[in-house]
Image (cartoon, rainbow, N blue to C red):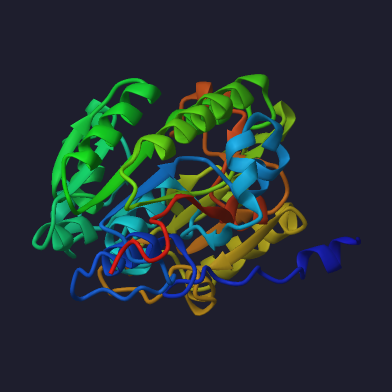
Length: 393
C-alpha cells in the first residue's frame, strides 16, 4: 500500500451507541430485571438476578487468539456476541458508558486524561482524579446502578480500593459495595451475595488482565496465565450462582502490543507541538489542545504536520471530524472543550508519548489501547449462566 492510499484509509464505523455497545449492557440488564425506565436493547432473557462481569482489557480478538488459555470461555464464544467499546477505547470512557448507559460525549469521560477547561489543566479520569474535579459534577447523570437501586438490591463486587474511588463515584455509584482482594475471593463474595437476595443486579469487575497486558504484553505468558486464572474463576462462578441467575461477561477494550522502537516521543518534533498548549489522552489516542490565542490556520498546519509524519500509521482527525463521525456520540456543550482540537488515533502498533509531561518509565508499557482498530474496539458479550427456560415468569 502506498502512502497516499494508506493515508486515505477510511475510519472504522462509529461505536454502536444505543444498539450494540458496552453502554447497552447494564441498561439491558436492568430492563430484563423489570426495572422501569430502561430498554432491553440487547434482548436479554428475564431473570431474578443478573451479574454483569467486566474483565478489563479482554478484547474479542485477544480472547480468540489466546483461547487455549481459556477453555471455559472458548466454549461460549460461538454463541456469544460482539459489542463495541466506547471511544476512546480506554477504561474511563467504556466504564463511563457501561455505568451510565450513555456515550462519552454525554458522560464526559472522553479519555484517560483530558483537559479540564475550567482549570486550564489536564486531569486524569481513572485512578488519579484531580482534587479540583467533582466526579458528580463532571458526570452529572444518574447511573444505571443508582436508578436500579430504587427498585431492587444492587451490588458491586470489586477490589477494595475502588469502593470510594472518584471513577466509581462518577459512573458506577449506587447500591452496596462488596470488596474482595484476590480473583477467587471476589468470586466467592459474588456468589454469596447473589444467593443472599431473591432479586439483584450485580456489577463484578476484574482488572488483573489489563494490568498484565500493560506490563508484559497481551501476547506474553503472564497475560495467558492471568487469563487462565480468570477463566477458572468464572467457570466456578457460573457453577455457584443460584439457578435463576443470568451471568454475562464483557470487556471494556482490547489491546495491542507495541515494540520498544515503536514507543515514540512525539514532542521531540517541534512541528508536532507547534501551537499546542496541552497534550492528553492515551499513547494510541492523543488529544492535542491549541493555545486559545492560536492564529488562524494553526489547526490546519498542525494537522498537516501530523499527517506528513504519521498519516500512514494513524488517523488524524479534528474535533469536528471526530464528532461528525459519531465517535463520541452526541456531545454536550460542556464536554466539547474536553476533546482535543486535533486527535491522533493509531492504526499501526505504535504508541505516542509527550515526554515533556510523561514519566519516561511509561515507555516500558508493552500493551496499549485507545484507538479504533478491531483489536481495541471489539469486545465480547458471553452468557456464562442463564435461567432454565420457563423457569422465570
